[in-house]
Image (cartoon, rainbow over all chains, first blue to last red; front, side, top):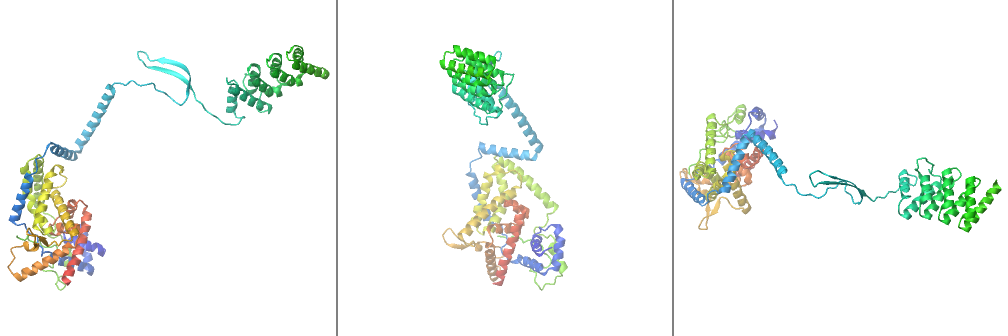
Length: 319
Length: 250
């Protein structure tokens, strides 16, 4: 045992608070340590001077006087009211609960189950408020069209299905499939400048030879340009479509037929004039020559008639 | 006032009818060391009879408290009669002043009466009441410390300073005037030494040395742990030892 601990234990031993298990080691330490023995003697030596202030009993007079004062003070305190008794009873109950954990657990369980049932009853019996319509996937968008209406039998509940138009923007390369798909839709958009821009861009891609193959399913960029050439009401759009189709006049029969139809029947002179120059590589084709011949004699525009006639002359010299 | 009989100390060997063990005393080391570690009467273990009596008293107290909590004033009065002498004795010894002791006595029981509804039977009424008393005494001691008041004097009703120690007399007074004077002088010095302790150290020392309470009970009364009470007792004892050594040297 170290001296510091021994000195503490001497005080504990003096006051009868030393645990039995430490008594032996303290006894051994005191036999070998003079300093701690001095400590023991010093503690013992305090007894006499401290006895100079003995614990004195209060005199009977003082006690009687104190009791009288206390009685008077207690008499002036009003009796406990209802709230005080309630609080007292609460604490008494708490005391009972602490001494009976099983009862406390049971009460908690009963309270929980009772509360659960009460909550269920309230939920079941409360009047349902008239709520407004509920939306799923509500976004800041415009309702495009209503697609269906379902009414729940024997009630006023109605489900309305509709589509919303959500404005979005996408940015990407002209070669990307998503952009191409959007440009194809743009080529059929009702707005003139959107159609013109879309067809112009698609035509540019075809002129540059970027993925503009011929397809039999009626899809793809080349088919879109053919549709635009045949049916678009805007002459500017038709002209742009012609530019895109130019590389395929010689190899694609469909393109050639569409261009010939345009030369024969397009209402716009500029479009018809543009077709004549495009047909130059295939002037030897009999169907082309037939259309050129008709145009040279029947087209209302004298310039087109002249150009067609010259083209026929060139094809004759070739043959 | 009759002084309460001082209990014999723990270290019975070396004592000769209360005489201090001196360096010249013939006492073998093993015997001395053994005596030091034997639990003596000071704070020694309680006998079975004492334990039973204490349990019986606690049961009676609890019953009285329950009746008092229901509003029966007579039950509370019985509790007062059981403990008011002990409360007054502690306050008187702590404060050395009858007036202050009387104030603490009254305030403690009024507090107990007002807050009896909060008593939860987790400890004995005695411990609960003493907690109130010790707090009131601590407050009084702190006020004194802050006012740097001389605890051995007070102002009486006529406004004159009176010696409080002179008010505490016992049956030995005037038996031998010279000895009585010497005893009073010694008492005054001891009080000075005790006053050098902090209020908390003073309280722990008081409850342990003079009241003989267990450290665990002292911890409960002061709303702290037994370990803290123990450390406070160590500090108080060492300080007091040093202060008393100065007195002996003076």
